[in-house]
Amino acid sequence: QVQLQESGPGLVKPSQSLSLTCSVSGGSISSASYHWSWIRQPAGKGLEWIGRIHANGRTNYNPSLKSRVSISVDTSKNQFSLNLGSVTAADMAVYYCARWGGNDQGYYFDYWGQGTLVTVSP
Amino acid sequence: QPVLTQPPSVSGAPGQRVTISCTGTSSNIGANYDVHWYQQIPGTAPKLLVFGDNYRPSGVPDRFSGSKSGTSASLAIRGLRAEDDADYYCQSYDSSRGGLVVVFGGGTRLTVL
Image 1: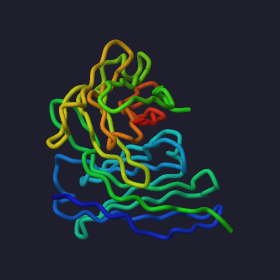
Image 2: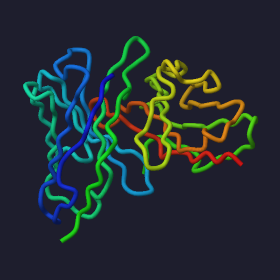
Image 3: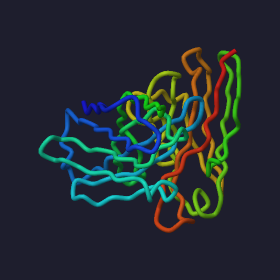
């Protein structure tokens, strides 16, 4: 059973960078069949896709965040990471990591981490 | 504003059938991109409910079904149960901003009366 676990600071100051790591267990992050994504959810609001990475390093970002986002992968540790720069109060959210995989019926998020709350405050 | 439009809330009594709509445009659902549905119980992570428009992952009851037509998709839940009380999100892809972007609906709160 694949499991994902987010980790990182729960409090970030405005204008600083937010850094989170997702640790994957029960499966290899190097599998060619999957991409690894970050998704966030502000309190009381809907889901917003941030971006994804493949083990080969290829990334794809949400255009609305692209100028501030970087996602990287460390296959030796079976982890991938999110860096979001110049944060503001609008970046306060629960951040989820998720596996993006699929088949002939499309690609979808089949495994999710439990989520981690990031607060932006001085 | 979410790219995909869902009703903010729906409700139904136990045993009834409800549907949740997901409306898009010609650059997402109307472009025949797959639609997936997720269930989120408050305080927990979303869970995949339906993929590829109308397929269910192992373990998801056949009370849940999806459909798609034109620029819209729907999730139907029959035989409502108390444990269906949750938020539901549709997800697809959009090609209007260069490349293929994952997009979600704004979510629908289902209340089982």
